Image (cartoon, rainbow, N blue to C red; front, side, top):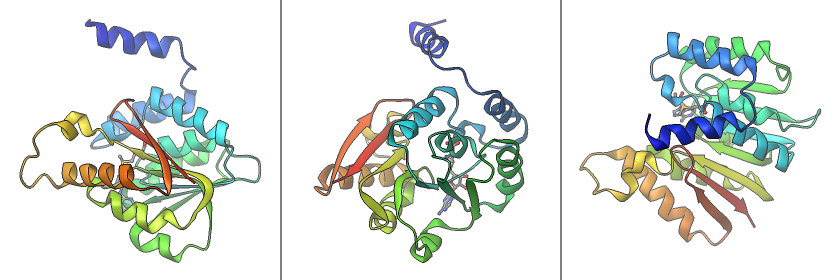
Length: 212
Ligand SMILES: C[S@@+](CC[C@H](N)C(=O)[O-])C[C@H]1O[C@@H](n2cnc3c(N)ncnc32)[C@H](O)[C@@H]1O
């Protein structure tokens, strides 16, 4: 075992345990789903839960549900009358995600919507305290633009995978549109004076953005 995987294990051993339902979801995702690596997992999940509990958001929007893991973590910080809307474009994920949402204590507070966030968000008549962007890397700037006016002042936008496996500091491979999308997003946020931001070197990079 190298030092970095030893440290990863140490971090998990000294952090909050992963709830049993999420352990089950993680296992099932690895048995039944293509690309289970997209599931947030233990460490990022506990961080999302902790941040959500710190913010105590009444309304959360998630762009990119996949198996429902991060939606369940973010829901842990909702007050009793709070709600999270999570949007997934792939209707084949619906049964899997819904089965775990339905088994959770947050089933009444999580609204899973199937469709394209870029079409759905402009039709929403809601304001959000917290938005989690975790969908197609090519569209990160577009998600940010479409959601920005729906985030309350003092509200937060989190964006996942902003270090994209370290590719953000490597020479850009022609036609790698996902890395180009992440690079464009990172530049855009760095230059946006309407917000404060910090890139956390967590897992694949998690950018925390606060609307002034
Ligand atoms: C990285 S996964 C999400 C993982 C999940 N948030 C978690 O942490 O457990 C990205 C998901 O975004 C979905 N997606 C891609 N484009 C989308 C769009 N325009 N609107 C909604 N979902 C989208 C994909 O189908 C995929 O399931």
